[in-house]
Image (cartoon, rainbow, N blue to C red; front, top):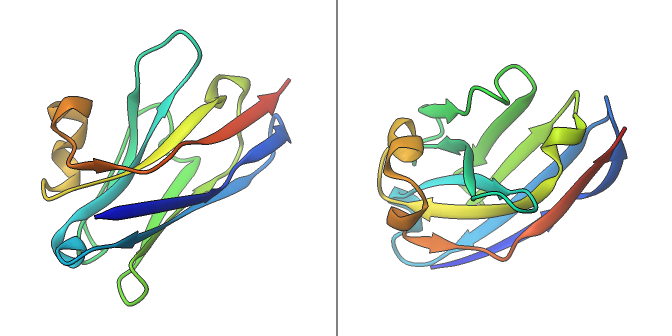
Length: 126
């Protein structure tokens, strides 16, 4: 499995950014896709995940109502639309994939995730 993330950058508080991740591999169509993030000096944390069909979705409480995750099953891509960004959203964002359903990602934690993409930096200025 390979994951290639794009997007990110610098934005002012209240602004929006979109992250995308292209996934490839024999089993990717049956896997969940999602995002974690890691702020300076902090542990990597769950952000959002979407199941293989695109219908099952899970969000961290800290981003509910502001971030939207979606999946294009034909193109094997996952997108994270981030609106109403806050300075505390500043982090390196990592695309991830795992066969586990999205509602369980926050519970299983980073150690159980099957594969990671390279991170992309999101900086939100106040």
